[in-house]
Amino acid sequence: MTKLILILAAQILIFAAVASAGDLGRTMNGKHLGPYKKEKFTHLRVYWHNSVNGRNPSSVMIQQPVLNSSSLFGAITMMDDPLTLDVPRNSTVVGQAQGMYAAAAQGEIGFLMVMNFAFTTGKYNGSTITILGRNVVMSKVREMPVVGGSEIFRFARGYVEARTKSIDLKAGVAIVEYNCYILHY
Image (cartoon, rainbow, N blue to C red):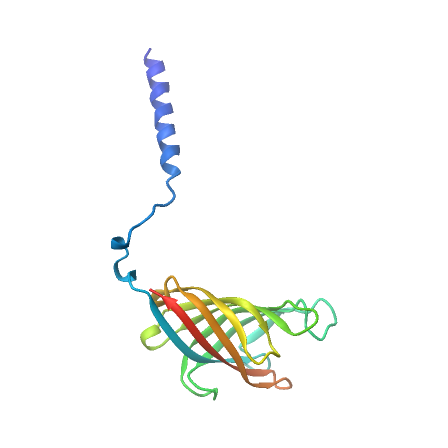
């Protein structure tokens, strides 16, 4: 009889543990959100400085194109590009664009952009926005979604508009203006 009670007690404990493990999340009402009750809208303008050549490039190709193609199809490049407040490279640096871009189009120069804008100064220091989208380089304006963020930009969503300000293919340098439209809490 004692053995039966021990087996029954063990089964009840196992059942309780399995049942509580299924409680992965819970629905929260607004009173638990604290500072995240009011949604905010932020517009940021930064300049992305990409350099693939020279002594200290900010981007490095880690996968060569798989085909001899003018679109660079298959190439993958990692980046840690400075973000500045104005077009000149020596203007105030406010963060870094960190991530990668991959040549994902065969008939045109089109990249899959996967990057975080990591802000390093002022009010946004320590905050990030995450951008994931298609960038057809020769288009005048490219729109990509903001899919997340951290710190000030928690629960971020929105979009960015990218406009090339200058490009020098021989020197391997490009400057792109990013207008970021962000909803966050």
